Amino acid sequence: MEMLIADGLDAAIIGVGARCGQPDIVAYNVEKVLEILVARDGMTYEEALEFYEFNIAGAWVGDQTPLWVRVGEMPQPCDGE
Image (cartoon, rainbow, N blue to C red):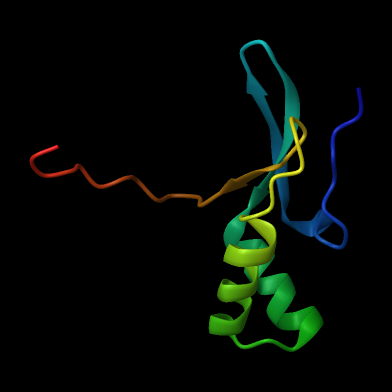
């Protein structure tokens, strides 16, 4: 099975995500995706972030949906949960 590639975002590919019992998926660096949107499409950073969140990260296209990685970010612990 071929992996799904997001059009025009090849420069943001950082590798392949492996998941137990699931097909491998392409992994993208979110910050690089935003840089591409700013440079290629003339968006401001804020416009690129909004576009990314709604149109890219918010799009489910099945089992081959790519993985969007925020490199270097660690989740914050939840207080009281």
